[in-house]
Structure formats: C-alpha cells, structure tokens
Length: 283
Length: 64
Ligand SMILES: [Zn+2]
Image (cartoon, each protein chain N blue to C red):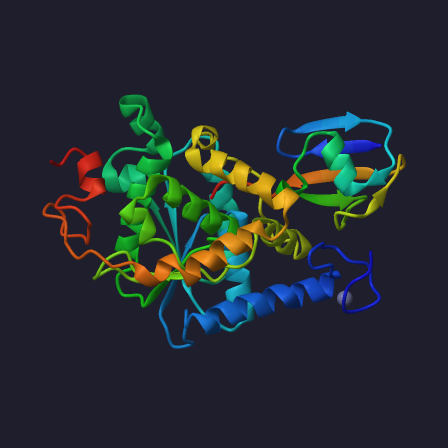
C-alpha cells in the first residue's frame, strides 16, 4: 500500500501515509486542535500531567516540537509492579524539564494498594479522585495543565456519561475544561489523535515507553466501554471521531459549571465536602 | 509464521497468507486495538503477510 501523498510505502491506514507524512499529519492535527480551541499561548506557564505512558510521552514530544516549554508533574499512586517502570521512562523522557513526583502515600498517607486492601472500593474511582486533587494542587501558579487524553479516552468518557449521566464527569469533557471556578484550565492537545495513532507516533520516534497495564484496569467499566467502542470502530471506521465531533456540536454547548468549595480543604468541589476528603474519612 | 501478541504476552506459530487485518481476525485480535509490526517495520492493515514473516501485534490499549 502506497502513501496517499508520495510514492513511499505507508505505515498507517485511514489515512494511508508513509512515516514522514504520518508524522506531519499528527503534528498538523495537534497544531490545529491547539489553534481551533485556543488551548495554548506561547507565554502560558504550562504544566504537563504525565505518567510515563505513551500518551503523555507523545504530548510532551509534540509540545516541544511546536516550541512550547513546560514543567511536568507525575503522580505515584502506589501500585506495586506498575508505576515504578513508567516513572523510570518518564525520567528519561522529561530531559531538562522540571519534574515533580507526588505520591498518594506521602500526600494522603495511604497508597492505592493499601486503600484497596482496606476498602475494596472501585480502584479507578478512588484513584481518579486522589489524582485530580494532587494535580490541582501542583497546578497552582500555572496557567494551564496539559493532559495526554486522546480521542479514545474522550469517546469512552462521552459514552460512559451517556450511560451514567454524571455531572462531574460531564465537566471533564471537551478539549479545554475547567471543572470549577478556581481550578486551572486543563487541555487535551491529543483530542483528535486516536490511541492507535499515538502508539504509531511513539514507536516511530522510538520514544522509551513500555507496555504495562494497571492491575486494577481489568475490572473497570471504562475498559468494557472501550472494547465495545473498538468493535464498532472496526465495523464502521470513524465511529470514535463521530462520537466526539457530534458531542462537541451538541451537548457541550449546553453545560454549566457548578460553583462551590469543599468545607474541609477549601478546594473547588461540586459538593460541600469534596470526594477526596470524603474518601480520606475527614467527614 | 511467528506471531507475537503483546497484550497477552503470547507467541504462536502458524501457517498463514493474507493481509495483516485478516491475520488479526483469524487469531481473534481486534485490529483497531493493535499496531502491526512486520519484520521490525510498522505496516498498515492491508499489508500482505506470508509464512516467512515475523509479525508483532503491539497493544494500543494501555493504562495511564
Ligand atoms: Zn508519503
């Protein structure tokens, strides 16, 4: 199969492009997303929330190529056999950017593994609540927080929201979000880049990223929704992008932001006591 | 042909001629969820493969 734009062999399907043209296709896509949704200015103080996984690694590589400078924050949830390796990769990928690692154990006095032994709660929910809290804390003094969320993540979140109708989840959708007044704006430069495209980019550029799966991932509802969307994508290619584009045109236009702060820790929250304080038993 | 599936950490040997997409279908892998590598090179879904090839299906789906 030949590249749509030159005589070389292609490395991707839909669109069919060679390595060089695939590379410019991704760079253009990210640049257009940044421009269309006014995600970033060159003068912004930027913090990347990274994990060492393929998404945050790709987003950092792309931002650097586009001429943006940034600091990095990573969260160590305390998941045995999972996070250590990705943080090692992150240290390599971070190069000269300032990197700060915050851990659940140090900040909340309990690792995710310990929490799971004690509470048997849904791991992804607990992890998400704590992680967002730490990123919000680290974001103090920055204009914008960049995440590695890609097209697949967004399509999954949209479908999960259709099934659950959760207002908090809703506030996290879109290429540029501010969960509450007082929170730093969060942006998703990989908004239209599919997970497969992200991996292609990472492998093509030989960026050090290893394949690991979170041990708690299997039982997640998100995983199930993801597999379902991917089977739709296989039978009708373009489904993911359609889900996201239709969502942008319709639903996103009618959401409102709740305004409140947690009575315990003062962080912006949709409830009188935020999820993080509730989970820590500070109620 | 030797086929490596990253997600399940399995390697299998089988006789096959066709496209990468057909190979994935045959072994029960959703082509959307993998990046196909043939003899060390990233290849598109309609790439022809035969018994002399070494194929890796890298997992696109991963946490974090
Ligand atoms: Zn080309």
